[in-house]
Image (cartoon, rainbow, N blue to C red; front, top):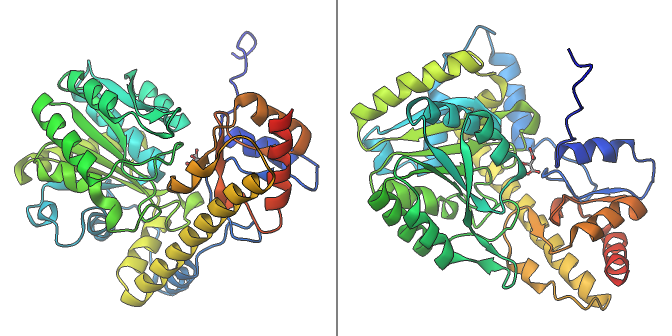
Length: 398
Ligand code: LMR
């Protein structure tokens, strides 16, 4: 079967980690894949997760299947987190949530679900966007189109151009938006922007699809809900893909959820029936462990408090490294102004490094950065920051 078939290219993000692992340089630094690392360069299991797992070990009585959409108590925790426990969406029961295997699983299930009814729909993605977005929607049968987002010159938003394009998106098409911590740019929309986008979505009739992979990594768990609140306020259909990889550190447990919001409870019941039908033919029902851990933490006030503390610690360390990185480059007298990186939010610095510098750093310094210049700031530590800044300064001089 494979004789005449060329190998697929390595994944632009996860493929870097594969290359990093085989690199024998003792100074190597992985600034590619978006996982949190502490100052020792380790991706830790959060203490609240460890505690929840200890509790579960004693209380778990079965490994029988979960329902197709997962444990309803987990779905309720997801909705509290996404909308806030006092949200009108929850009170009126117009959201249907299914436990999905990670943010990618949530995006794919949402894409498959939409495509089965909106057969001609295209998906509109920001320029740039997370490397996997296009592949996920393409695999579900969508044509991919782009809307302007990041302005390379100002390192800010192309907001007016973005709005102009969104006004032209045909009704029934899907617009994929990053709810917070835009990946890769780190440049976010704020409530006043979201309100305008919500009004356009309602007027034109396209379907917003929010990728909410970094809740809590922007300004805070509550503050990061701006996008969700704007679309909830205009009473339209929209989708939210949640991931608990980053904010709970549950990367390899593939813990996420897809939430379908409808204008009424009646429509939501229909949406849930089709959501379940979509899940059933993809993976039948979700893996339990990550959802159990998340539910256990969010149902226990003490564990919730320790989760919030640990989340804040992760965010603070990233901000510290963000500042150290910018100051480190400035101290080395690089001509380029990198101060804009201090205003970016989330795990990444969209550094402005060109692909030739990125390739040079990998080849000569064993520093792994995603093409396009996205740096995972959590990969910087007090031990490697000088090496990284020295190397980037050298790359820019070459
Ligand atoms: C990233 O953007 O690096 C992470 O979300 C990991 C991934 O799956 O690409």
